[in-house]
Length: 471
Image (spheres, rainbow, N blue to C red):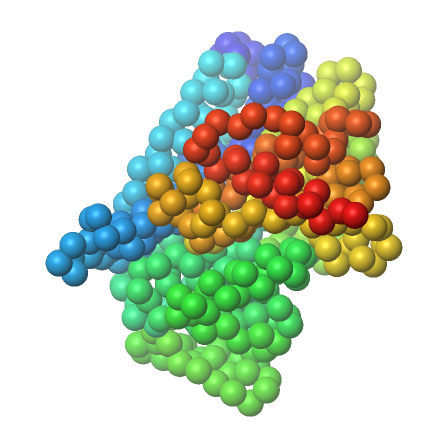
């Protein structure tokens, strides 16, 4: 984009609010289609929450910790009782390096595609106009024919919890942790809570994981959920299920958590990781006739168009599946809708879950509980990582792969994986599940020759195991 285009009365074909995966996907698609596009980003750098506070830093932390665990558990390296030890604040440096690389790369995308980036906080003041408060406090006005809201989400802050206290954190502020706690309470045992429980426990920090539900990650297949619970318990994490806090008391050197059940516990600090809310409250949506729901999310149609025809929304701000990968695709689809009149693509049916605990969890398709409730005759094929040569070589023997398939048609109905590299392994099964008709059967894994030794071989082992159960 030239300076002349930018200074054209501050008007653009499309303005995108937010430079996370959804905003980036939309911007790249629209600029390549010849549209005059601007991105409004309230932070100093592009990338959104995914790059700076969520996916990238937390997974970088997880990788560093898992390598420390791998080293300390391998007798080849830890001779004479010598072990590696790092603190949370020390490994934050690794995450910062990765974040900086990601930021530079994504900034390059906008530069090469001549997409104007405006730094500041946007607020609608009219149907086709936004006011942007810049970092120096000045106010600028821009207009566009169409808008895309890609503002993402933030950690939910319930009333009565003092997040300004030096020992009370959410999943964003925990990345600024400077002291090295000996004991942490993690309130909320969803994906984020379980991931951070693995990270802190891997660093030797005492962990109390508070689950407001009856079991961990209830949306998972029960066996996978049970595997995670056992693994966290076996590594020393204390899990408290079905507990809700009454109030959180901050002290000079820690926190005291009071439960509705009458119990209480004390720790050096607390990570509150129980829910997220869409970033819509400061957008001035009342000026364009949009009303978010109680979670700050917007309703959209199949083309990601809101109730206001010229305003679209993608990513966390529209809810499920709230994944960075899905948000990028949603952004691409919005670009198609704006440039051609309708979205030509849509999210695939089988979107995998990727949970970066230690070990990882990933699944796609139906669980055993869902298939049983739907009265679908299925069978199970299992393989344990400890029986795979590649896992024995790498020392990553904890974990398993489970394939659920129809007893009569052999159609693959669900795949569930627990273990190192599960989020990578799952994509092999996902690719077969996406094949239509006779292409999606468990026979594929039996009739295919896999590289040996590989973790992918788990599919062949599980397929044979399942087929042997048929009669």
